[in-house]
Image (tube, rainbow, N blue to C red):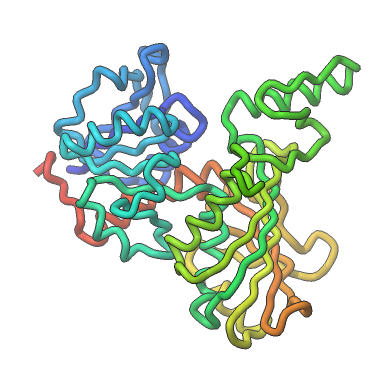
Amino acid sequence: MGYRVAVVGATGAVGREMLKTLAERNFPVSEVIALASGRSAGQEVSFGEKTVLKVQNLEKFDFRGTDIGLFSPGASVSAVHAPRAAAAGCVVIDNTSQFRMEPDVPLVVPEVNPQHLKNFSKRNIIANPNCSTIQMVVALKPLHEIARIKRVVVSTYQSVSGAGKEAMDELFNQTRAMYVNDPARPEQFTKPIAFNCIPHIDKFMDDGFTKEEWKMAAETRKILDPDIAVVATCVRVPVFIAHSEAVHVEFEGPITESQAWDALRDAPGVQVIDKREDGGYVTQLDAAGEDAVYVSRLRRDPTVPHGLAFWCVSDNLRKGAALNTVQIAEALVAQGLIAEKRAA
């Protein structure tokens, strides 16, 4: 007994992580189908330690009889195939940017706004937020419950895995090239990424912000509170996996460091590691491969009447993508919003 689950984009970094996460968390599946583009059809991917799945062609796949579709194939592909799957009765949980800001599509982080899931049936699609937004709102939610958040200023330090496998290969190849005095030619990024930081993620908008920076502001308001003002600077850094963020929060009323520590320690999905000593904080290397959103360096911001600052780190492929997607599926089951209709 269980759900028939399709993983779309199964050969990509996030798709493989979705398959791994489904197996690790023992999600109740009766069958798992791996889907990707026609050029990837016939490849093999792992589901758990013992099961190997042969990848099927997404364009030819009939979603009738499939309960849940976990999508991460790129926005343009989701735009075509997610509505097709939804129309066939498959509940789509989409990891791309395609549907996030559509008003009739819930944008969900299960630790933050699981109540929004009840609205998914209008389109049969649920959107997974941007990776950098997810980790920030998980940390902000317990603080917002104590003293309402007025404004957030955030600078991100985002790993190259957020741009895909080719971007990870570029960092590796450029790093190796530097050591042997070969040219480090940028292809995936606008400038060399090895030993460098690039303050440019996604496209530039007319106001000078990038689309990634706009996403953090718009998505935070949709998920957490429409009255929160957010200004972001998003930077790509030469790290393979995990994003980190320096977050400065201004509240409407007073909040102490002690209150914040207690709230964060009790919050689902958050781990506080903050010893105020050498090495007493979490880095991206520490967070890679882990599920939690880590908070360190929590302190009072003396520049505003009611302010806190903290450091936030999480694995963008796990909590920022695959894990959050699977958690949405788990929340659908827990809330009784989807039944094992195929196995019944």
